[in-house]
Image (cartoon, rainbow, N blue to C red; front, side, top):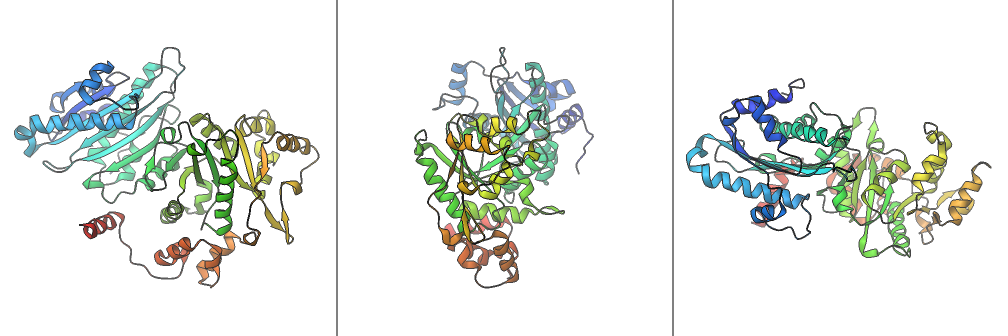
Length: 486
């Protein structure tokens, strides 16, 4: 049961008094704040086998090995730390304590705020642990961004989230959603954000990490989460580092032929830009929390996974975000890369972007929003729409006289461009109409979506398609697949 009001010191003390829990701490980059909290709580000798902090790179490389990238605040470094420290626990203590102890290794590698306050403070934190003696281990790994403006405050926040992680691993493991929620106990998103989480191990076989990422965004712990085309969760700043990014936003329920045409032809034009290296391009579909909410009942998690599965099967990376306004999405992406960013939009999206009412809360109004949205390396690729049986493009775009000069400025400065190659036969397709046909079991919708999408909808009874499918939990699916391979 989730104990919302339990404090950090009480959590550390409870762990210290649990004689089954025993392990080591390895913390690099912001002191040894997590271990310090267990020491200060009292009774730490019952929990701590070892604490260490190899700050010197030569020492660190000697202990954990050399990083090929030359970077130390990366997930691969964290995993090496967990591997080393946990294996030492088993090697040195398994015979003496193994039958009665659930071992853990806690590690972090962090770049806290420097003296000049010029760096992006972030870090990787992980806990490897057993839930029962002599059992296999589980991992919970998170990536955090630290937002406090003082180094000492960042250190304190790291200590709190470290205690929360260890406590959650042992006392909330049976409810991963609760574990995620508890990570921010005694903290606020204004101080620290969690933009990636990954569960693995025998006790988390049925956990879908994409859903855990959705919980991060839904609970306000981060504004965006990212999955690769293989469905695996990614840490955005690492996955998009030094990449050109092309994004298409939509409900994508389901992905239709017209949306696939938008993605493919938008990508073709983006790659043809003179300042774009096509070998460094990442194409993403973006789902906002607003678009995930099908009704007042909130987010249908199965529907969310269905959409992600389909997009990934079509080779797309998928982002979920809490950025309703396009300029906020661009501001976020611009923090991750200095290379060119493209947005593939339809005419209705362009109309939304130019509605001044969306910028009333900004002191500078629409000009302030556009200063971010159309910054130096951002461009909109606009897909046409069908209106009154005629193709409607950027040349037909109608605006109030006060905004027309602004629009012409953006067009003439190569910030807005029509997608030239498009399949006019697809323009009549409406996502809402396709969804209604699917849910009513009508014929004909199959020709309006990619063949692979149609087959998946029928096989899995997605989006309300009237059929019956046996539900198999995700973890069981994995075990079935493994047994087939074996």
